[in-house]
Length: 141
Image (cartoon, rainbow, N blue to C red):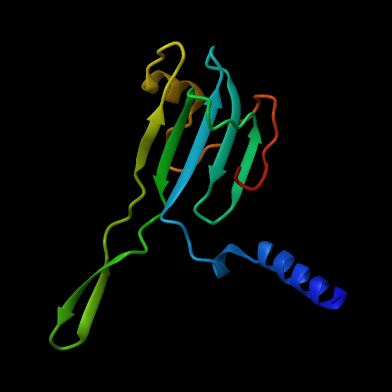
């Protein structure tokens, strides 16, 4: 019984550390930055396109003061149409790398544009908030 448990535990550990190419890619990356009533960054959690997740600081889903930024991961989706000579022909549908702010609320009514330019967090790609007193650790909370 112990051997079976050890085998299962080993399989779970191996699956956790398998390269992300073995897993299906995400369509979107998410970057949620939490801040306090004075707009100081207090936490962050990130879901990268490559199936890598990080979190750190004060992650509190009930905290209304945060911004969630979604970035497209490229577009693995295709537009498939019938082709009388070849059956079906599938072509990529653009790049899907735009940035969308899904949620933003500030205690001081700081405009989102001002917040984004101050912390450089709303560009294409996912930015890590450095220098705010917390370390990012593996996983998504």
